[in-house]
Image (cartoon, rainbow, N blue to C red; front, side, top):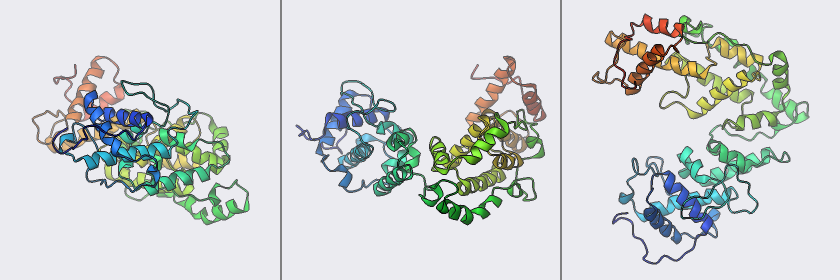
Length: 408
């Protein structure tokens, strides 16, 4: 592990087999495949006092120093043992916070048997932190408070909140989470009526007057809105029609919140939906499409919100008002088509800048992913699986169908 890590020659065992399993799974997920190296890391963790992990100080880790990406982004041999200890401490804090080690845990979303370290039932915090590295650096008091607020919000419903956050760990980091107990009251109750009255003006924010193409100067090109860039845009029939819309409209606030949790969203109520819709309009104004989540640096919460809207539409559960807002915005309900348009627009920008639609590796600043995408289009056409609409869209750019394909 290097001179920077000082290991005790005969470590005194202080962490349980369960804790060792958690840490071993994590280090393996981060690229420490050598069992002997992982054993050294586990021996180092024996310095931790695990009897009161939830009351111990916060891990002194910073977002400017991502932890740990072995071996590509975190040179283990250059780290001091205190940092390794703090990573181990945070993992075990999360494990205990989510009920790790309790008897009778089910195995869905839990650890399995693996390798030389015995594996036990418990929340798979290794997977959670791999998916959401921010859990290593987030204020642990804030994470704890958020979990408690979620439990309060669904009290009496039988929802297993720890299991929910294991599946969607982003819920513990969401900046938009706010517990509004009045808004969670059944519709028609005095508290709910007060909340609805206070939020009534928000309906206008999500209305068609705020969508691109209605005079705000932002949005997709006319050709894209009409589906001329090789896709299914413009077909917006909901699966279950008005019956599903009525069901969505009558859903109680807690049910709506739980449906949002399935997508890693704190909620998808009126205020939150209006806020995300405005973000979508800004995204459209900047990029000219609705391919949120398919570009580096896209807001992950907005990407999850967009995915939920597509899912709600596909299942016939998207409220008619929301559906109309998204249609007016030029929203692409087909995720595969949205991604295709994203790369098409990048090729279009390349064609404008370079005078041709044949990106090659030697071109300054060209995206290798764009080159591969062009290869996929050629292969798809030769395989007769590329739609005529997409072929025509590429022809308009002067696309070279005879280029060499490194993927073929």
